[in-house]
Image (cartoon, rainbow, N blue to C red):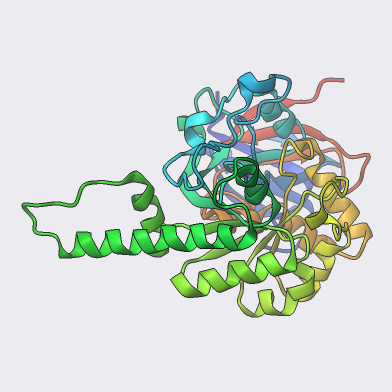
Length: 390
């Protein structure tokens, strides 16, 4: 049960949208952040006081590209609902409808400080379906949802050409994949034109695929473009220019090779997974140094595990290793919090310790970028949802 008013005192506080506060205070009221301040912050008379001396208070981490709940660990085919690879265009399918909140990965996420994620369909199709932004705690996905849909997943590169090439059907090449995406957007443009021209007494028959794509064309939701290689990234930008939608680059393994162009166009990159082998040609330039290169060039980055490719518990460690290889540490923390929240369109709710936002935060034993630090307690909407027991 959520305590109405709580005050956490004597902590090192990382608000993210403001400077670090030593000996800081965080006051939570009715499930929201009320006040973040220094040692002189007045404590409300009705507050339950938690002295967390020596601990760090950090907003819940956010991973903007995962398959939690749709690619369940330890379940084999029975828990595999990531890709609907029966049609190259499945813009009508929703990750929301496949998420199992009982997936053990959610418990792993909370225990490692990750309190919100964006669940994506997989990358087997040129157009894979609708993504959803959710919190990592809840009995049903409906009560966990922050934004739905939060985007549409699309894939360029090796995956769709392999999947459909093996079936001897389009697309079996990069040029075929691009053609499928363009064709789908043209259909969506025609659909919108028909709706606009239709008589009130003769409405256009609904088409769930085209409705979803129309939301991208109207810039209501972003286009989440899976791409690794620099040439695929260039294709992603080219198609975005043709149709005028909001583009987000997912993975961006070689985005550093085009960093100046990506930065100039203000396209965010959700980079990762980083702690993986070079398992295919398009990721041969994977490097833990790439986040630092992108950030230094002015690109807005978020770091992802692509769970379960890298287990969600290693999100913070990917950031720490990136700092070791040149990423600014403050930028690293933004890449785990406010940046992914903004990309997901939920930064009004989560991503920083800001008055009025949801009280989603963790008590860490020390600096979260220190390998020896751990989450000691986690709070979602001001309610304790996890406590580490020795």
